[in-house]
Length: 264
Image (cartoon, rainbow, N blue to C red):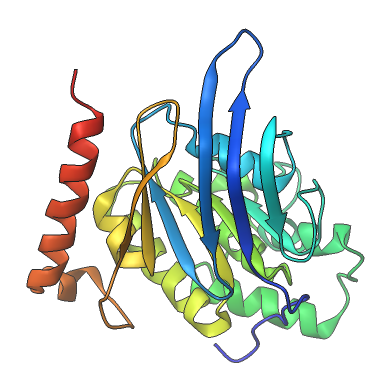
């Protein structure tokens, strides 16, 4: 990719220190959670359902307030609407009345970019081509499959000049073929820009394919149980990893850590 959007901040770390969050009614979601995501690193969080993975992502994004502990995002505290943080949800959240190109441009328009800017338009077209949607620029979301809509959301996320990306199971509801295609597309985009990514998934194969490090959470209340560095060469492909004994060893290790958390 030649026209990668420029990163908007030199400070690209996420630091979470001893964070605890309890929801109204007394439900303790996360307790004494600590971790760091270094600049340019791709970190994946895995853990049992309900262990607070989305909660910590929402705290980092500034969508909910922590009760105790400290969180640093880039060069400041969490705050909703920051231009240096992009958040991709499990649902595509496209605007149904806007065409594909207009949806991709929407986030940067909010940040003050002109839709007539040739550089921005060129980047949007290139991103759509990279996710396999060249020729669909004028389609409406209702004319696209779920997987295609997620590809639009991925292009929109990467068009934002945000050095910090939060991704909450963005490919979790997709069929296996589309999921593999988008995982490989995400890797190409990330490798071209080296943004800082914090990614949540339940899919261990996806986690190993994408991550520099994997953080394994305990069952609720969520804590970081262990950290596993993924020492596999990049660029990666899932087909090549299937023939790598280290991939299967990582899978067995992570599954064993999660298994003890899911015993009843």
